[in-house]
Length: 303
Image (cartoon, rainbow, N blue to C red; front, side, top):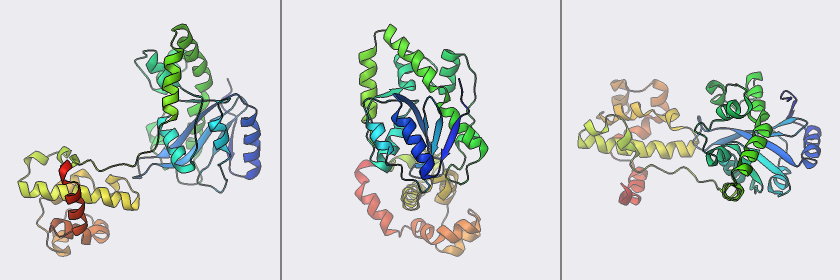
């Protein structure tokens, strides 16, 4: 197996090469890299497609129009191999309006076959006898920064490297077990998944450590802070922890705050956080934030 032949598709000429290869293929393996760690709304950062010849790394953040991929994702004649590809399908539908047919998902296939360990590394080890490691550090790295590092590129290429051989092994097992119909339904249903925007967890504030030890007034403050953080994160497309951590929310729920000076005197937040968020936090902690009150009233039946 050759896993090291790859091409970063960042020019029209390279896109044409990739398109010709995909057109002549009956099977491709695919994956995406997206940042769900730093952003409220998962950000698509890379699309990997492996053919028999090469692995192509498409940059959705560049200047190349990738809409041509849609025809091939929708083609029933082209098998698309993925691993736990539900969210890949959702994001590609969300960002490009793509449709999918003829999917084979190795995670779903292994689950159907009763495998107890379903990670890609575990399945590659079990079925192919190959050990490889997917580093969390790279997985959670800033995939939206350019240029991508050599480590990131190598990681992205390896995500599809073993899928063709794993697909063959799992497909054989499904045929031997007489599970073709069940597998076909699973893959068809997977192709129908759609993107759902992240919703406010109406009782999420109660899951923050220490909530049940708070006095009633502090519980109400924590509820307001929790809902404000959700709306703020959604508005500026940042992960919750990049706004304020759960620990920050809990500490602030105890605070009697009337103005920015009070917020600074308490020493609960950095100067930068106070500068950026202080006025809004003062409103929330004093119970005067009308937007949060309106949101709370609208959803009170779910509390």
